[in-house]
Image (cartoon, rainbow, N blue to C red; front, side):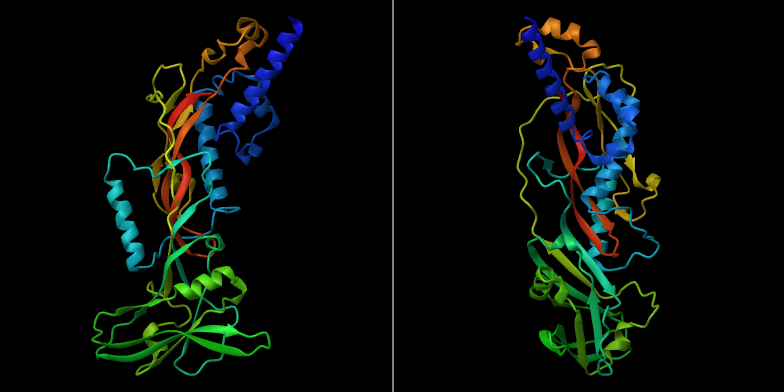
Amino acid sequence: MTVSLGVLLLWCHVLYAARCLADPLLSLPELEDYSDEELAEQDSGNCSRCGDKGQRRALRLDMIKYQILNQLGLKEAPNVTLKNLPHIPPLDSLLDHYAMQADAPHFVPGPEYGDDDDFYLSAEKVLSFLQPPPNPLELAIGDQQLYFQLPSNLQQSQIQSSHLWIHLKPTRHTLHLNMTLYQVDLQASGQIDFIQVKRKTLEKKNKHGHWVVFDVKKTLTHWLKHPSENHGFVLHATGGDITDLLAMSEGSTDTKKPFIETKVEKPKHRRTKRMIGLNCEENAEEVRCCRYPLTVDFEEFGWDWIIAPKRYEANYCSGECPYVFLQKYPHTHLVQQANPQGSAGPCCAPRKMSSISMLYFDSEFNIIYGMLPGMVVDRCGCS
């Protein structure tokens, strides 16, 4: 009997560790921010509860902050101010989308997150804005060099489309422009070649300004596979001074600077088995494992680099888990007696999570839109 009980106790402790560490809220490296004493208290306490509601709520908020930075591949929050968002069609469309969601009673979560899914952000659209070229070229008068620093997390993505958007300033006269976009190719010998990408002819009245769009999917796909070969584009035009039309002077506050809009193939999401779980209000007296509401407000975090959403419903799990799952095993009563506070019991943890869409600035001032998995607790359960 002694040997059997010892083996069973060892099995229960292994099960406890595996189950609690499998909880997405407890397995993140965010736990490094907690002291050994706090972790010991969590470990030696009742795993069935895994901390009271107040502790679980605070831990969930801290985990979310770490989780977002980790999933976006950021070591720290980008130092970005949102005082001057660019006024460009793709961004306006995305902001309209979030404005419509804000009118709904609850933020609509994205696809369900499963254990086998990629735990990092799945970008669906990236807006890369013009930046000073690392190697400025000596060009003919009127030609314009255009350089864009592409996000590294796009390197493994399947590009659906990529377009370069250029805004021409309003003019009093009709434009008669022949524009040619070149890819800058730097040879090993140091010689610079210009590879033609696209040509456009523009015969248009331009009283209110005009967007010109170039398809650059082939070039961008090549640059993502070979980042060191990204030396930017050169735009050449006849029939007008393209440099003046683009208002590219240094220190310009124009919010319609050239940018590249890249759309990425959406990943396929699998459907997981539905499970039943309790939902409770924050002031509920329920002691069983339950899902409680939790609103995450990014403005309270001071995270102005997140453009949208400004807040969302994340939810968290808390409550007791009975020993029902152990009843089919022998010595259940002895196990409970030998393990005070039920340290070998199952944990109340998320059993179904879903993603949210997020629009944000990265450290290079690219604007990225994508799905962030595992951000909303849809269902809690014991295991």
